[in-house]
Image 1 (tube, helix red, strand yellow):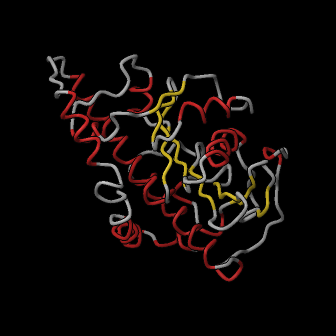
Image 2: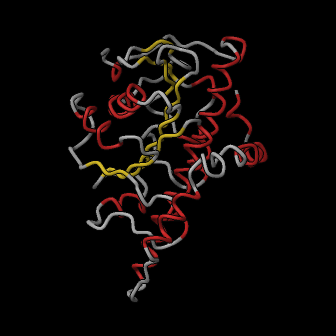
Image 3: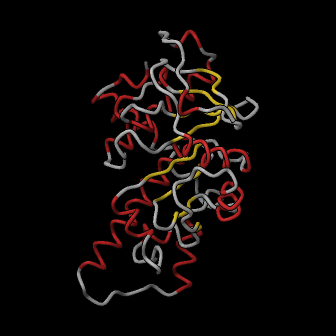
Length: 262
C-alpha cells in the first residue's frame, strides 16, 4: 500500500471531458452523496468517507480528498485509488487520502462485488446507539427495516490492515452495519441505495434516542410483525429503495448548489 497520508498530486484542473461517461456519472453521483450527507447533518468535518466503485474497472474506487468538507466535494475533486491503496488519479491535487478510509472501505469493496457504494458516518445518534448494549431496537417501522443489521466490535481507529478480514466477516451479506462504539456503515448496490440506507438508519437511531429519552415504558411489536416488515423492505419483494428517490435528491441539490457536478 502506498503512503496515502503523504500523497500530494500535481495541481491540475479537471473537467468532465477528462473522464469516460461511466466514471463521470459515478463521480457526479458520489459527489452528490457527499453533499446530501452534509445537508442532512451526517458529516464529520473533513473526516469520514463515502466510496464508490467505478463500474467495469478492476476494483477502482473513488474517495474524498482528505481535507475538504463534504459540502465542498465535486465530481472532479474525488480521488481514484485501487484496493491496494495506490492513487490512480489525484482529483484536484491539493489533498491526499485518509488511510482509515482505505482500510474500512477497501475491505468491503474487495469482498463484496455486489456493492458499489460504502458509506460510513460518526453521527451523534448513530454513535450513541453504537454504544448501547441492546443495539438498534425495532421500535418503529423505520427501525424494522434493519431488524437483521450486522455488528462489528470496536478495535480502535481503523488503521490496521488485519481488521479488514473481521469487518468483512461481520458484515456478511448485510447492507448495513453498526460499528460498536464508533458509528454506522451502509453498503449499497448503487450510490443512491447506499444513501437511502444511511438516511433511514440514521433516522432509526434518532427515533430510538427520542423514545428511550422519554423515560416511559416502550412497546415492542411481535416478532412476526417485525419479520414481515423487514421482508417488505427487501429489494426482491418491492424495489431497491433509493433509486426512485435519487432524481428528487439531485433536484434538491440543484436548487441549492449544483456545483457538485463540476
